[in-house]
Image 1 (tube, helix red, strand yellow):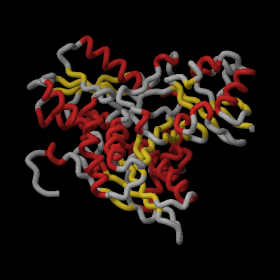
Image 2 (tube, chains in turn purple, green):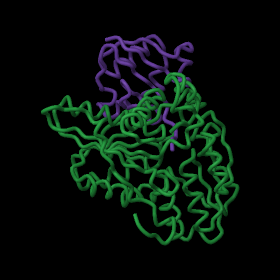
Image 3 (spheres, rainbow over the protein chains, first blue to last red):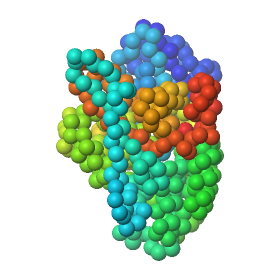
Length: 90
Length: 320
């Protein structure tokens, strides 16, 4: 399953400055593990104690994965995965 | 509508209107209907009149806010304008901490209402406004920081006002969709509706801004409002400027509703929810919040010209 993952500015130190990377996996966790295999250190920024970091939001096609199974949320071929830090709105 | 003792008494009781053209055609299947709650009918033209008044009245009851006091608040605009109106009527001073990348109209309106504006850096968006406001609160202990992100009166305003209004006007409600900022609307309305309709779906639409706004120095500077209660929500969408603008224009084009840009993001999520209901062949009555009208965003060029150019202009702006 090939997906495009967009990387926020704050995590691009791990991807050599790349704004987005290609990755594969059938769940969000598998996608993260796949990115980690090429961009070491990024997983520790995203996942803490087997859960998504409190200040990290991940969206599959614009839907927050926390409401779709969290790290086990399903990812399909061609999906867009967006990683963003949590910031204030309002 | 009728006669009121003062402007403050006109907060709330906003209309809920059907959207016959935007609601999907389900043919012989169960109906899927969209309903818009028009918060521009509040006295300063946005949903923020509700939490602003509730937070001031709660602070008056607590004794934190006394005659002639100065209120302090971090705000990207609407909360500040609502507070400025209430402060004017009640005789308080107001200092707003506002990110410099908000629309010109919001800045001018605040000044017209007599509020003092302290600008926070564009990079970091509202995060920076919150940080600066907390610093100012420490330096000025006599100022009263209402703090919409953590003030329970914000949630309460929607639990006691917006939520009951929605259930009364739409007893058959199946979904509620609103913008996610302080989280006050979603948490307050969501809790009320859930108590009365346990199966109701509560969906957040979160604006996805340009990169500038996410320019944190490190992840520990991330921000989740103290009011946020993930348990209340059943879904959360992130909507970028392009989709938000596209839907804002559709709402105007098809239904004649001239809404602010954040409403486009909310409508985008509401339509995604509607599409799921159509596919599942389930009846849905989806109410969503139109937080304000479009007047304050005209200078952004959002409503005319090529869509992608208009969306590009919003990059780096706090458009919701």
